[in-house]
Every structure is written in structure tokens, then in C-alpha cells.
Length: 306
Length: 287
Image (cartoon, rainbow over the protein chains, first blue to last red):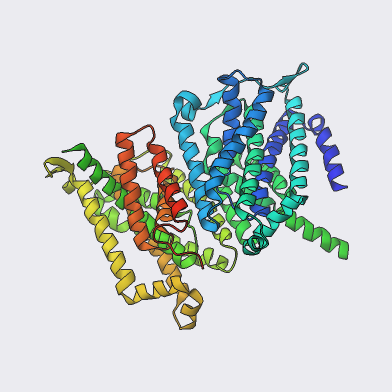
């Protein structure tokens, strides 16, 4: 019911909110996909990736480069972006899933940083820290994503599709196995599951969705720079997930929206946006561990009881 | 001087700088289970405070002595006010917390000193080059080698030969038993965290003339330090030492002989070692 209302609101939004509000929610939808993809790893599989921006950025660069260097149709570019991120996740994941806990965190961080320095240093291909801009936005049947309203609906479609797919994944046998992994890896191994392979599958799926979000992001901005791969960007994704509520899928999406709205608000009032992000991060971890989603759920349940 | 020898010395310099960072990181991890993502921030903060001390006093040595103090105080405050309340929770919470703190520190540094890259000048008494093995080598770099080795030796003596070191080792092996036999573990944790931070801050000052002082240097040094302790084995001082030298030398040689591929070299080293020994060279399997 709630989701239906939400969906109606989402359909009407660009006609209610004007161009500024539309752009803001377009961006929120894109980041929501990335945050949900991270939640698949963090919340459902118990794998905390500190380098999730790597796949987001790879997707974005793959889209930009496939258009600029290969002259590929941007719709195909999205597909290429998803495949490239999945491939990057396969290679990086192959090494990362061998270790667990803290070493996993460090390895994902290190690999993301490797890709970041590659993007900065290979100026010939990536344009270095100046980034790449001015590539074509996709066009279908005369409708161009240059129009912000079509861009919005494309992202809404992408979001709904991702949410639906991720839910199917989580509710599948594979998804249940992932939760089993998070709860008790030793037992899963004893039950005969190949835990490394399960983790790798989750890692690749998660990377593919992040790459999809990255491709949309590149289209939306018509620009991509190494910032999309940075340590800070990985941190923002983590914050969205923690803020929204780990392991609730919709929570991280809400977290992404709150995060962006807050960013707009705070950065128009103060330069110290980064410090505010950090402090919110600290407060969430200390006092608000179940996130907005968990808080709302508790609140609704309490309301239902009385 | 032979290019090989000079690169070897440069690698040693970089490796020992990494050791100043990685040793604290590794001991903090061993004792508290915290992967301190703010450790690079302590390094950066130390470097910037050192910069200010030099501009006030004109002396590098004052910077070296004074800069670690506020860093240690900040670290102790973080441990007491925040980290301490998370020990019983999932380890990931502590990592997230220090991650958030690293953002705060970056903003703080940019607020106080701006976004420019500064250069900390080396002490006047060490400005010259020394004739060494038939070539010239900057005195300051040689001093870093001596300093780094001295710190390594002192840390080893402290951990292995003193009462405090025995307490730290007991804490690393089994925190609850250590508390049970009457060790003041909370004090031990605060002290270790603050000392590790002070060491990182000092490393920031020492590295200032070589790496430069800028916002962003935190991540620049944190990542190789992580690779060092992943390679060396987490919680092991010996691992931090061997890992630091390995990475320092590999990275320097990579940059000199194959600049195109140098970026990947230390990652390749890490991957190979992790595949062969998942817990690092000197790490123990998690209990």
C-alpha cells in the first residue's frame, strides 16, 4: 500500500516539483540503486565493501568511453557498462572473497584506490582528473534523455527494475543462502555450500547493479571524473546504507534520498559539508544503528500495538 | 652512486616511513580489533601541526617533538568518548566510525590550512648530502633510515621486554583473561590508541619534507599502510616491519624501473602473498 502511494507520487513528481526538484530526485534514484547494490553485499551477505565506488565508477567510465572511443550507441553503452562492472567485480571479487572480515574491508578499499589512481594517471584514456564530458545521451523513438523529464522517468524505471530484481534475488534460494552466510559461515560450509562461490556471485551481482547506477550517473551529468571512484564516494555509499538501515534494501534507497536532500541543504549553508557528513556518520553508528528504516518500522509497529 | 643502490636506499626510506604508520595500525588492530581508517588522518594532522610549529618556532625539531602531542590527545578523546562504547558491538561499527572521523579530519585540515600542498623544509643541519658508497645521498634521508630503525628497535624492546609490553601482548592474546587477572585494560587500550596516533603524527612530520603536506595525503599513505599489514599479518609488529620494507622497496624500484606498471606492483605483491598465505606472512589464523 505504502509503496503504491510512493509510486504514484513518483509518477507525478516531475509535474509537481519543477526542474530543480526533478533533477534532485533523479540523482537520488540513481544513488538509491547504488546504495541498494551495496546493501546486497553488506546487509544480506555480511560482506562490508569499502570500495563500492569502484564499480559505480567503472560503469560510468565504461559508458562514457564506449560512446566516445568506440562510437557505441548509448543504450548499448549501458549494457557494456553493466557487463564491465560485473567483470571488474569478478576479478576483484576473486581475490577479495578469499579473506573475510577486516581483511575484506582493506582489500576492497585497496582495489578501489587502485582503480582511482588508474583513472587519474591514464590521462590519454580517462582524461585524468579533468574527467570526460560531453558525450551523447541516449535517444529512443525521438525521445531524448537530454530532456530532464525523460531522464527522470528513465531513472525511475531503472530504480523500479533494480528494486524488483534485487528483491527477487534476495527472496530466492540464492538470497537465503547469502543470509545464511552472513549469520554463520561455518555452518553453511558444513552444509555443503561453496561459500567462496556464493560470495563471489553476490559480489558480481552487486557490482553489476552499481555499474548500472554509474552508467545512469554518467548519462545524467554527461560528465565523469575520478571522483566517482574515490574513497569519499565509497564512504558516501556506505553512509547511505547505514543511514537508511542495513539489510532492508528499501532503507538504503531512502538513505540515499535523505543524504542528497541533506547535502543540498547543508552545502547551501556551509562549506563544511564533509565534516557534517562525518559527524552524521559517527552519530548513526553510535546511536542510530538500525537506520531510518528500522526507526520507522519500530515506530509503526508501536503505533499498531497501541 | 649506482642507481640500484640509491633506489634501494630510497626504498628503505619509504619503507621505514610506512613502518611508523603501519606499526601503530597493526598494534591497534591486534589489541582492539579496530581497523583504524582515521590513522592516515593522524598522520596528516601531525604533518599540518608540524608545519605550523615550524612556522612559529623555525625549528623542525620542535615540530617533531610537539606535533604528536595534540594528535595523541585527539586520539585519546576519540577512544574514550566514542570507540570504547563500540567494543562489544560488531567490528564493522568501529571501522565505520573511524571512516566518518576521517571525513571530519579532512574538513578540519582544509578549514585550518586550506587545500594547498605545502612543503615542510628539512632541518638545516641535515640539508647536505653525504658521500656514501661512492655516491651522494641526502643526509635527511639517511637520518630517516636511522630514525626508523631506532623506532623499530625501541618498539620491539617495548613490546617484548618490558612490563607494559607484556600487558599489551596479554591484551592482544586474550582481552578477557587479561582483565580477569587485574590488568587495567581500558587504560591500556586508550594508551595504545593514543601512542599509535602519536607515532602516526610523528611520521607525518618526518615524511613532510619528502611526501609534502596536503589534504589527501591521509588516503595516500593509509592505503599502502593497509597493504603492509595485510601482507605482514595483522597484529604482528614483525609483520609490519617486514611488510613495510617489502612494499617500500618494491614500490620504489617499480617507479624507477617500470613507471608504467609501478602502480600495480604492490597490489600484485599483495595478491600473491594473500593467495599463498591468507593471514599474511606473520599473522595467525583468526581464533
